[in-house]
Amino acid sequence: MLVGKLKNRAIIKRVIILGLCVSFGWYLKGRLTPQVAMSGGMGAQTPYVLIEQVKKADVSPRQTYIASVEPIKSVNLKPQVTGYVEKVLFEEGSFVREGDILFVIEQDRYIATVELRQAELESAKANLVRAERDYKRQKSLSKQNISSKATMDTAESTYLQAKAAVKQAEANLELAKIELGYTEIKAPISGQIGKALVTEGNYVASTLQTLARIVQINPIRVAFSVTDKEMLTMRQTYGDNTQPISTEVILPNGTIFNGKIRAHFADNEVNSETATIAVYLEYDNDKQYLLPGNYVNIRVGTAEPQMSILVPQAALAQDEHGNYVIVVKDNIAEQRRVTVGDIIGDKQVVLEGLSSEDKVIIQGLQKVRNGQTVKASLVNTEAEAK
Image (cartoon, rainbow, N blue to C red; front, side, top):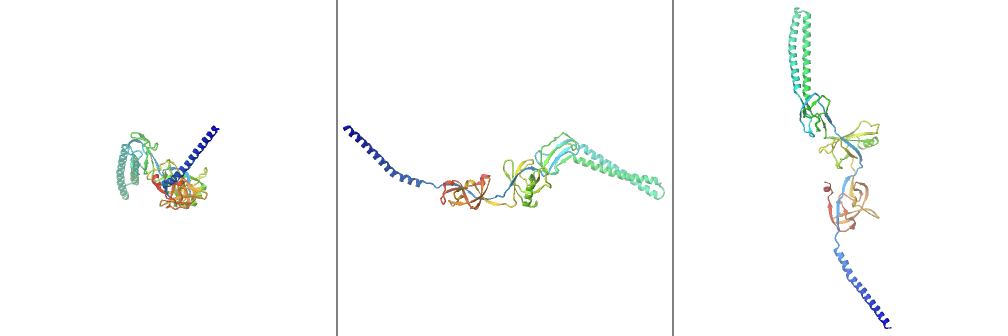
């Protein structure tokens, strides 16, 4: 009996202790929870975001083609006379101007030939003087019936032959001077010269071998082919060759070349085997980014640019009401509903809802509410592009 009472007292004691612990726990919760909540509210920070200036850009549809770069003018230098190369007067890979002397072939023999032809001309002129005097004398004697007709005819024939001999000697001298001039091989065009394929001391034969090659670098031509259907569309879009054309040349390293177009034209017939026609564009190439023989991609756009707002895709968000961006002005976030168009690269075309003066959040979008104050840093995309 006594044992049962002791057990009941122990149970009651434990229940009382447990109740006191629970009560103390609720007391602590009531004391601490408001302080934690208040502490959290007082310590909340203004969200930090990155913003980017909205830009307007040309989003005209462009067709991309594979194109090749070729010189407008190119020349293979070949000797016109035979002989040993005496001098090579250019630096390989350099720019040469029209008229520059590049090679000199041994000149002594050709100088001697010119002197010989000059002497032959002087001799022919002397013979002409003598023949002319004899002819005039016989003509005078013939009028006086002193000289026979046969002698007169012989004198006249000799005189005419002497005149012909002078003309022949003059022609021979001119040919000798021309050949002497060929001993100096000059640049027929301005352009970049390559490797000297023949060096000093080598014997060259007339027109049988190439000494060097010159190609025109600036301006330069880009050529590509389009289908006959695409050509009709181009003619309807651009009209004649005087109309402006928008192009971007994508270089082998991926960079964009936007050189000034000097001229553009299409070939005069369609290739019957491929049903394509060649199109040629001539560019200013001052920095020599385009090199003959390169393969490039070229994007051809419409004549009139179509300007639209572009934003990074990271600036775009979506909810049950549609697409929106968050614009920051005077450090205040503002939600804007937008109508979007095509995607161009990593940019989204925005048709309605933004202007070029707006700045949109591109990082930190999820932690910002409409009307909230933010700390914003502007991203300079132009500096990053450089």
